[in-house]
Image 1 (cartoon, rainbow, N blue to C red):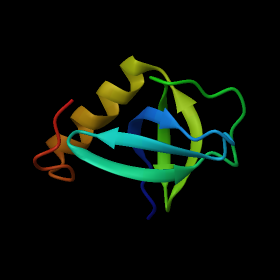
Image 2: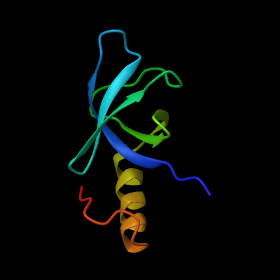
Image 3: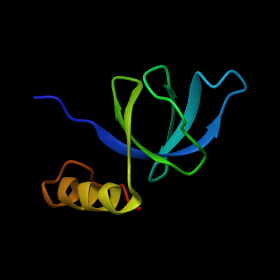
Image 4: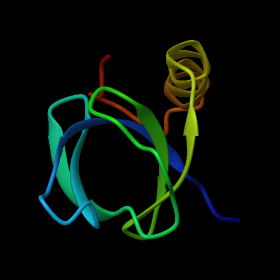
Length: 78
């Protein structure tokens, strides 16, 4: 089974190919190669270092709540 975690874009590099995202207090650099028209503040689904698609803030919150209920994101808070 594969999981994609929702994270919020904090910054995008000048080339537009990479972004720094946040999931709670965790920060990670991810590739934006699979997406077009991504902006600061957008929520994206992250899997193995790639942003797969954008999602709404509401969907990100619901997903993170479900992961927390399942014990998959202990210590991550939005």
